[in-house]
Length: 117
Image (cartoon, rainbow, N blue to C red; front, side, top):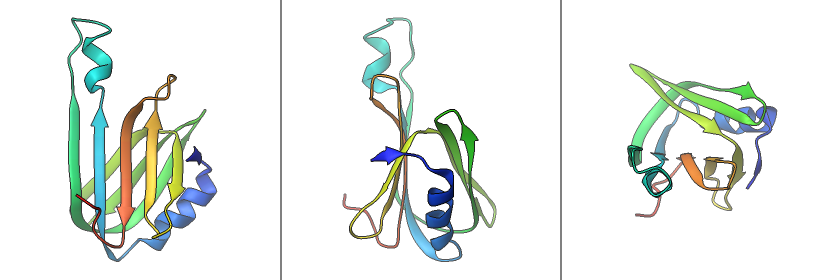
């Protein structure tokens, strides 16, 4: 993965617009929270292979962290804290947010075909 370049990521996001695609969205502080601070709550969200069609996509942010929003017919999908990105050999867009220690905190992935499960 490489650090986010807004222009490059925006261009790739737009290639998925107005098509039925598959989305993976994951957030976690999971194992990173309670072992450091016993009073911390572990939180997370996970959805894989959600079949969606988005009509608009936008990446915004600065200082190395970004928010990506996908506009659906009746709502939004968004991920905040994105720091890195890549395109796989089979044209899947992988966006991830890592903390200062390199641990995964958020992932948003978009693909023309289902992700492995």
